[in-house]
Image 1 (tube, one colour):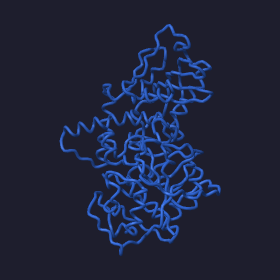
Image 2 (cartoon, one colour; image 1 turned 60 degrees about the vertical axis):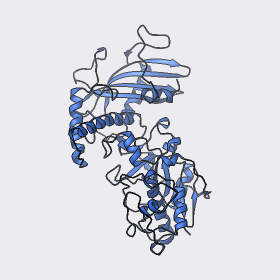
Image 3 (cartoon, rainbow, N blue to C red; image 1 turned 135 degrees about the vertical axis):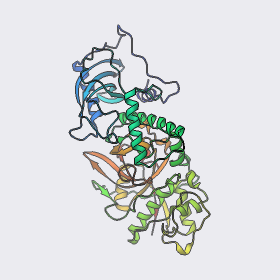
Image 4 (spheres, rainbow, N blue to C red; image 1 turned 180 degrees about the vertical axis):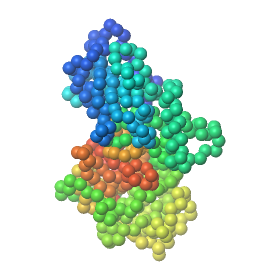
Length: 462
């Protein structure tokens, strides 16, 4: 099975999927029985430990205590199945730590594919065990974390989840209509925390996933309310291609520091990300050409763009055309955001900003960086995989899980740079400042992560 298919299989994302049972002993050809760490297992074990510690601050990183494993070989690849105990410092803040967090000793199961000298983490399940238990010859280990949302919850885990949910309700001021709804939302929250840990285990960046203000929503609710399925549609017309900026991109750039970016806004319970992405771009273009930063009206686009579908989604290319045909954009103060479609109330006399054209940008990320540093913030659309649970750090999902063919959220690139050597795009979102890093999303740069490069565009102001 191809590595990415096995990955989807392990996550239960293929119909009828379930991990294959471990081979019975004695071993089949090409596999070895569980055994203490040999020289061959040390490389995959260190890789697994590094993956576990990625994004953790000094003083909070786990250390490897014991490991054993088996290996299966196929062609030029080897699949390592490891069981290891890790020791990590205790953490008291459930809102920041992975759950559950009260134990110091962890039992972890890792599956690592090695091909052509490169490793890929396919599976990671970790849960605390009693600190005195460290003999991996004992076959009675049991993780506190359930392996899937269908498994029954151990009592200790259920208690921790209940405590975490109570803190979530207080933090985000949630109210539910009945005890039944509260219980339902708790069950959704529980499944989401398990899913967030799976996403965490498979992320190759420094991002941390966990509790967010969307943690009590089902995936269907989240997608229906906040995302934009129309971005997957092929537009009926095309934009002209922008000229490539051939100058080398500076090592880092941030238009927030240059005064070209307004405050983070909040689209509310409305799939209007397309409008916020476009107004953010026009705000930057107007600032660069005219020297004035104005907060522009998304509500005008919801009401007056008759091609797009307001809270049901839209395309940046249509929004640019609407702005041009209407005669400009009013400011946020003159045409304030309501979060739902109303009758068009645009007044050409109140329009403060106009655009002359719009252009499609290169799909080469180096060219995008060079263009951004010279021309301003860029409207983009991406696959929002994992963003429901994103807290901070640089996200770098595996490509099969965050395919560029399934883009469903529009945002605004405002800068780029590196953190501890990891390249990133700094992306302004429209979910308020109480999400992500004060409203911003940081995504790995240079790997076409989540389709960040497939729908880059900008207005033209002359």
